[in-house]
Amino acid sequence: MIPAISVIGSLFGTSPLEQTAPTLGLETKAATAGNGFTNVFDKVGEIINDLKTGEAAAMSGLQGQTSTQNVVESVMKAEHSLQTAIAIRDKLVSAYQSISQMAI
Image (cartoon, rainbow, N blue to C red; front, side, top):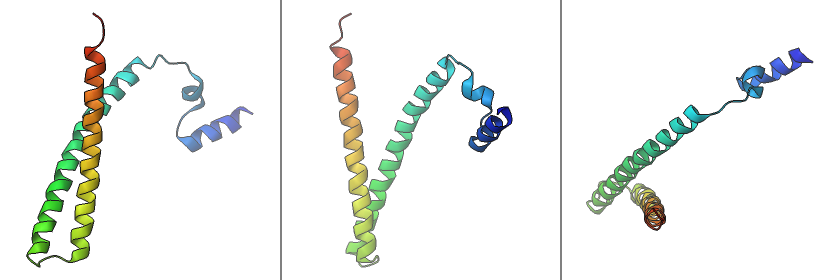
């Protein structure tokens, strides 16, 4: 039975001890929170690049240098990125309002 468990664990890339050992996870949670906040700013950087790309494609489309399909795809991607940025902003504002209403 034990070798079967180790085979299953090796399929998922973890040892049976890692699967069953209790951990506090404090370091992992802190690292995940830090990475999550960093990922938000990385996403914002991607959004800005998508908006610039969409704008550049629209301008080159007006000048006749880019196909209509490329312009539409770039503008749709930029629109999706803008909606994502608005959703992130709304979440940040909501979090700030929740924190500001907390009693000290």
